[in-house]
Image 1 (cartoon, helix red, strand yellow):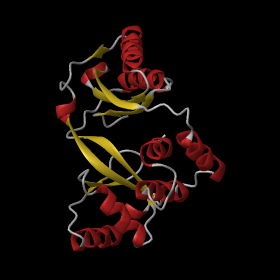
Image 2 (image 1 turned 120 degrees about the vertical axis):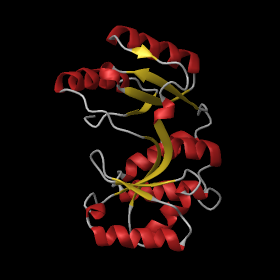
Image 3 (image 1 turned 45 degrees about the vertical axis):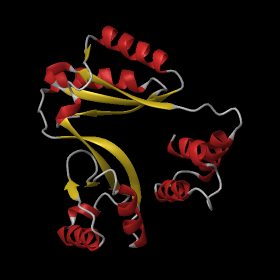
Amino acid sequence: MKIINCVRTGGSNTNLNQNLVRILREAQSANVPKENIERAIKKGDSKDAVALEKCKFELYLFGGIGAIITAETDSTTRTNKKINEIAGKTGIKVANKGSIEFQFNHKGVFTPTDAQLLLDKSKEDAILEMALENEIDIDFYHHGDAPKILSSIEDLHKLTDVLFTNNINGVSSLEYIPQELITVTEEVYEQNMKVIERFLEEPDVDEIFTNTSSL
């Protein structure tokens, strides 16, 4: 999706679209098959390509857990209707704008390809030094499946370039990072997982962020 949208907004010529250069480099470091990359470029460059609009939804999950859904769609009306429909069927509530988002920080995120990299304190210190030398303020985030490097949204591209220059491969993204994590029971965890899986079945849904330590 990132490749498609980047081509739609900036074109497929890598000499003119430096954002595409960065995204292709990330895709290659994540071992995305070459044919998938070429297919995405072709789709984004098609004359029939439809511009997609970004939107987000805030939800109250079971156990007091907050969630943010990000989506990209060619019809916000359709997507809004579908999100509300799924919420109603799964027994959760769509929150008013801002009711959940204030519990998260919107951050630039770099996830190293080597998941063990940030478990080494000496390597963390080396990355911190690289960032400081380039006047980039970073934090390390160790919750979830893979450790991440956090920066401001404005500094993410600069951080990505610095890390790749120093042979640290990975994928950059924008994510909602919870300010505090809420622990839930296994039963509530399973309930929320089923709800999240249902939302992720929708083609317009991009990502779902929660503030629980169990998801």
